[in-house]
Image (cartoon, rainbow, N blue to C red; front, side, top):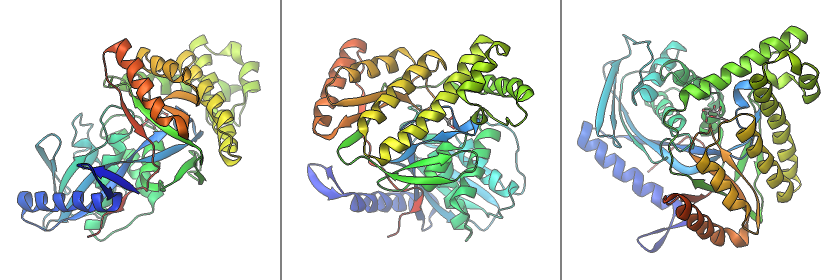
Length: 401
Ligand code: GLA
């Protein structure tokens, strides 16, 4: 794989080496120590939105944008972290864990340290330097990439290791308990288990996953609305609460039901009159979205981008009308994409209320797609969208010299 740097073709591997070297030097200046370098990717979800916390199915891909962490052990029990993005420091003593929600960037790092200790992992003190290259608030999971990169770095610096699934669970716990967001497991799982050239079909109940090769003649393209989902946590938690209400009511009628994952469309229709109208629509989204993920897997397996694209369009409609997590800008991006020949489908991706869309585009028209979307969106909103062609990447790794 090659990329352009100052007009020159360079391999992605050598770009990673340069980045790692730069971080080693920064770290040396900051802590006067040699560092090891780790990085964890952001992600984009192809389909399966708001299904993870309903124990359903999702299909994310790890993207080639990363949070980088330089790390070295300390002799005492403190974790020091410096954020290169913010130019700020924070620290914590592992012997005196502060077990409270901290609405501060450092929760994504120190919360993971605390979560590791609570889970019985005897990580020791460490110096960390964090540099995030995943856009924040764009629905590309910058927070999970910070958590996973930091968690992996803390473990490695202490000579410990954990399975990717265990690390994902500990990072999710950190976000739930210390950053105060009740996120599901999708983002942490893909940051840990992503694989270059593959999407991950994840069962969020069992955490079993299947790697699926992407289409050979169509590309996934991400368009960033440039509207951050800054204040969406309350809405997110409210959607979760609606799903819990639905589960409680439906479980009263069907004893085997533990989550909306266990409910079919026919079951929902049979008991529709028991549910408040909004709760009914939320449930209809989750249940139909789970079915779409499984149908999308089949479309991917038989190399059928037409069907995959149709499922993406249906997913968007359901997220917009039933789950009500889209936004004017996301709808506009989807609409513009839908008018371009060679686009199979488009939908909002991630939690919603801002952030990005994802589109499936015939390979030959990707360039045309990029300029048409940029033109149309900028004309309507005055904002220039960032557009990324998805290159499925590996999960968390050490970047060796
Ligand atoms: C956020 C959460 C995920 C998932 C998505 C919606 O990204 O962190 O767990 O719920 O929203 O699919």
